[in-house]
Length: 335
Image (cartoon, rainbow, N blue to C red; front, side, top):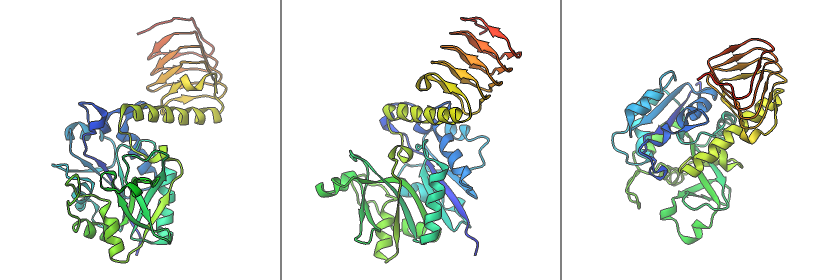
């Protein structure tokens, strides 16, 4: 039988720790809503079907999904992650494997998800749980392992003993499960915990009770896989995505004189031998021909520059087509 894989992306929560009237997955990180980054990573991992669970500010969240090949289901009452996954059961009909992750993990990489899937298919447990390690794991569910290295349980911070809270391996909140096991197990999960919610993590204990294998997939780079829960983490995610993009451009032949201060949107095309000085911002649908120079503090939006164009310092250029070899004076404006 051919294996078929679907994904459930959980995007129904409020995100109260963001201290915002806006649902967490709507917050922008590096030019895009947070949820878009997650969906792009999942889509590139060749999922056959993606179901997004929406709830809080459902109309706004639905609105940003336009153009993405996903289905949505509504979690009318937020009763925990396990309940959210159950809401998506009908949308996953026919899938043999289900990837589950949250819509607040904008740094997750396609390569990480693909590696997790490859391990899961090789080892064939009923459940694979992604884990990582933190020096300060406060607030995260702890991974309890057996002597053989399998996952025996995931204990939430509020339900953990002092000894368990000392464990630094934590649950990254990304799962890959056999579909039949997943939904059967979730219907057995109760709400006898400090939050009164249906914990998705309780399916680990159910699997172990039934002598079924639960494997960890350890990812060493915690920042890649953990959710954004605060404005501080929002800024950290922004910086990480900016750094990834800048490294990609520099490897492709673009010079950056102060890359930590340069922002180039993912859809912009920058030619080889371009030189970007500090505090440059390029966004919208921009393209730069070979050998352009953008001096300090230049802002470009929806511009097309030919080859060898030089834009003077602190210029703001919007919606312009600029011919090869043109020189734009410093402090130019066309707002």
